[in-house]
Amino acid sequence: MAKNRSFFKSLRGKLSLQMLLISLIPIIIIGLLVNLSMSDAENQASDSVDEARVALESDTIGAHLAKQAKQMSNTMETWMSARSAQARAYAVSPVVTTVAADASNEVYVGAANTFLMDQLSINPYFAVVTVTDATGMAVAGAFSAPQSDRTIIPMAGISPQLMAP
Image (cartoon, rainbow, N blue to C red; front, side):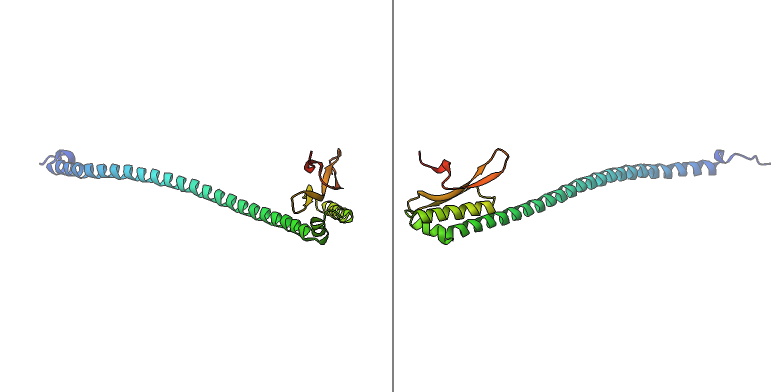
């Protein structure tokens, strides 16, 4: 009668076990290497996504700030153009050109002072408006006089700061 040997004590069992171990060791090594490389790839992808997120946020904020700066620039340019147009309108008004040409006539000087004072009361953006003759001497004008209650009263005449000592 043949003895029943356990499977792992028989030649077939020993060979099967050896073949199993020989085939599993490379599979386990390859699995570990793939796992490590995938972990590294995942970390690199995560870092790349984080960098892209930061760059996108930075670009978005930068674009928003650039848009705001452009809007502010356009607003300031429009405002300055309007002030420049008002100053040109004052300069070409007949009363101003007449007094600039002939400052000896007190009627013209008074009319120019009144005109400029009225313009300052309408337009609060100018503090001093002065008319000069061809030599650069101030001959007429108006200025805003600040009051203690923080209001401003337009005054006719040449600003005291522009008067020669």
